[in-house]
Length: 253
Image (cartoon, rainbow, N blue to C red; front, side, top):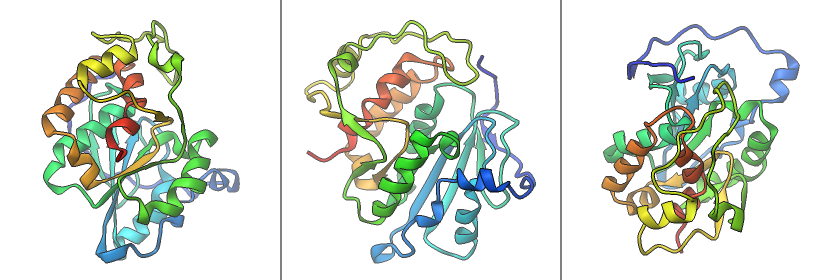
């Protein structure tokens, strides 16, 4: 169920106790970020959180406090999210899942986007299919990406093109999905990005990074329109479409 919340800066709370060895083993190894980025580049790590324990962000906080080239911003969609001292946190209404969060960040930071932004769901520490691609594929190459890179990429399938959801069960939602005004995915793509061919591939899991230049190749007006679509509810069909759209929007042809 969506939980209403007022957007705004929220109070930083004390960090939870030191995690157990089992929990440490599940961390996404953010210390694997390149120690130095070329030409003074900066990375911002954007986290979309909903009630998760964010202790796995501590290595980045230490690096940030040391004056390194990394900034961390957490967008929290639930008041019970376990925040971490030293991390800027912003409260958002619980709508649109992580894609809404990413779109909100792009729109509100348009004039001050980092050289590279790493987008992560708060669940990345607990889900192996998000954590391992981040650790093994994305982090080692983060300082050298040209436009867009993702932890897990697969070809766009015929099933993706025909995707139209009636029920989707994930997380704490009630199983209902707010349908897109235009569906299935291929019709939604054509309506929102006329003239662009369908993506050849899709980046799954909400774990990816994009250069500022790639984000700005897409007009701000289009990002704003996508953000509005994602505000219709908690589990929105357009969120599943957006997950399949990031690659095609940001990958340089």
